[in-house]
Length: 432
Ligand code: PSV
Ligand code: MN
Image 1 (cartoon, helix red, strand yellow):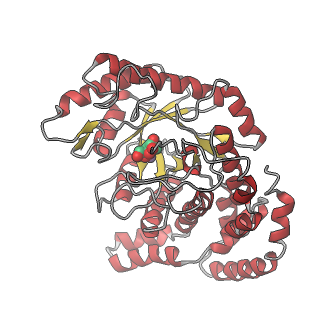
Image 2 (cartoon, protein in one colour):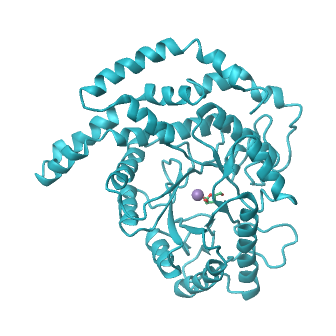
Image 3 (cartoon, protein in one colour):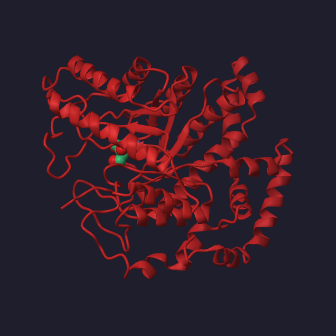
């Protein structure tokens, strides 16, 4: 735990807020009881919830136009872990970090694992990167990686994924997520079928090297960096590939990677039904893959997704064990603040979904009572359960109000001297 933000410091701030929280919590408990909902049970479930933080998320992001670096940004995986530790210390629901390779590779990966362990943090999925060339790379990924027409380039991309699995083993990960930027900018540039065939044969090599207790997550994305077509463009192609590869392959849903207006919660339901839901990269968007803070634009959509997830949990849906993770780019906010707010927003959607009266909903659906079915969801969504989230954090030793607590500690200012600006941002994106 950080010297700046520790238990003593958090307790001192909590002590001035606990009386108000107790009153809010009791009042909410009383109101929920009228709906036969136990506030204590909700709090326990909120405490058991967790969502992983992406290592690249703690660095300030940027757009194609500019990046405006923040103060005291983390410069390497060790400092990223330190920032992730601040997040988890305050919100208590982010005990896992998802690293991106080769951005987070160091000679001694055991030291990375150890450093995380000193903060009581573990590693979630590892992410490969074949959407960028590395210095002195022999065969460029400019025209694709796992699907490149050049065999030597494909081999390089395959080898990088195998390296990621090796690095992942050293830090205790059990999942590799593969997202490729491969695609085309012009009609006719790429043979759709040929590219997908090459993708599958490359992925089959990676899959064959996957340890028995590992999973492979496929991440689709409709556009960017390719603007006319991408090889794994939507959940349809994604799940077809996952089915082709085998039982250890699953389809990942990044909320920003769909066509506008797509019914994402329905895609989630379908993937659950066919036991192929890997998990999520949570974020929010207005137009495309905006990577904005989770729940900041469309919290109702996030709730509806959790409605499907909680429904699957209640039904004990076979093979249902999704991984939750944030995947965002913070360009105008302090990444630590955005990640804390986002983690709590996702937790909020989960708790709201727990409050849906599923028996009543099933009856309204059966009776074709559209209005009341919709109201049943709205009733849960409209309930302010802030006190539940605050109490779950308080009971776990976290901050009742994480943002106020973080700001009052002046973390960045105190680190500024030790962390001078560096050329490469912690987000892994080089912009000059
Ligand atoms: C691609 O846009 C993506 O969502 C993938 O998950 C990448 O690995 C990540 O963003 C980081 O750039
Ligand atoms: Mn993603």
